[in-house]
Image (cartoon, rainbow, N blue to C red; front, side, top):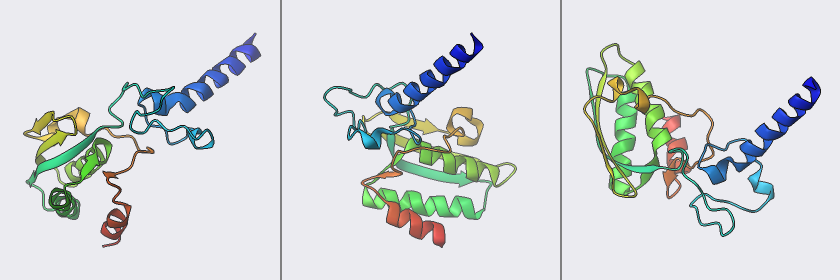
Length: 161
């Protein structure tokens, strides 16, 4: 009986993991590349994307103002935020959360004022991101692109400097 339960559990995890892109979840380990079915923008005919999480949310950084922190993490992300504003690129919310957590962790009394606007037009204003636990949690592995349109070249150049 135990062996049957283990087999059922492993198969269920496998199925849920491979359906993750269609459920709006992070899907770094999914094997959808072999099926030629992608639900990145929810435009798949048979399996539209259901938004069970905010993994696919992209935002425009309207304001990034660190306070009480003078760290390389703050100045580098500030430069990146300015670049995305000047090029009118939207950034994955998970990417913003990761960098916010890095800036908040770089100084004991760090504070960040942040204004974001989603692609759907919803405004997200934070007086202090460092005091907002939901903005400091991020997924370490994700298959979502950092920016739209893709900005890998700039992110790699930014990481080297």
